[in-house]
Image (cartoon, rainbow, N blue to C red):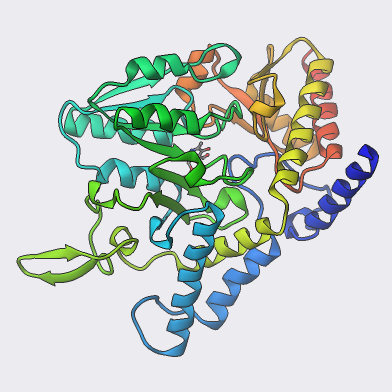
Length: 413
Ligand SMILES: Cc1ncc(COP(=O)(O)O)c(C=O)c1O
């Protein structure tokens, strides 16, 4: 039974790989293990973008001629697909942004802060979920508290409870750590935060590509993610704003489309979601993201997660066997992590490891801080190597990674 399932999985991955032009073109095949940074794009996404540019390039929401209407329909259909994808209650809860970073900044600049307000975030955040709050701290005199980690790389929820006060306006937390792969208990966190009336923002950049994300189930107020980390193009992302809290924010950017009426004396805001989308949006990006969602929707998300879990397990098992000099970060419990393995080899700089993996075997991994400097400092390390997986990665690629690491270690011995 098990063997049959494995065979089916393998066959599917081979089929999936054929959809990615970059995986079929090279003489020395590319082994792409930097999916937490951005994913490769399937031809279905590339075609959808090309089709818009070649056949119906027009602005949206403005004109009445046919191709403009077609573009508007495609753009708004994309919004509807995204709403379904994260199980939002209404399409108007979906705001298009440039990506996760812009989505988080939109909340940071949009919320009506008062001096003395408090934000709670964590030390495992990507810089995108730290720096915007630090900017707001300087501007408005708010206070930031950082929740740390307990054993097994989990967030210390007791500390979160201690940090919450009646001044806490927002808890901003990542769903999945882009360095450790830790999956955080968002539902539990929202329940704790809501008890005291704080809003909850979830950075879902590393969860929406890999697992079922259901905003109703999570109970969050804001959720941010990027299209390019889930097969879509760069420059498009999403901010989900729970229906009913939109008036807690002022639009941070003004311009066309986000207003209802403008006089020289002032203006009134447009309805949701356009209120937060000033100017010409990334139409091709939204259409590309919709094609990516179609692609992902044809895959079983549970199966996808299982496939990645297998690769993570295999990588960890093999790394542990290679040498005690390899330190692996993150939970030992595979159920608690998602698609990412970060590690260091004693005595070899992470950039040297990444350079040699590229040089020797055309393997792309990330090295350095992965925009998580506070987390690296907390772990007492200067940098790390990160391998991150997606639907098209194979066991053979994991074997190649580990064999090349063995070779590298021999060179440095
Ligand atoms: C957890 C997390 N948050 C935020 C971001 C920022 O995403 P973007 O650069 O697409 O805005 C990333 C990107 O790596 C991430 O991994």
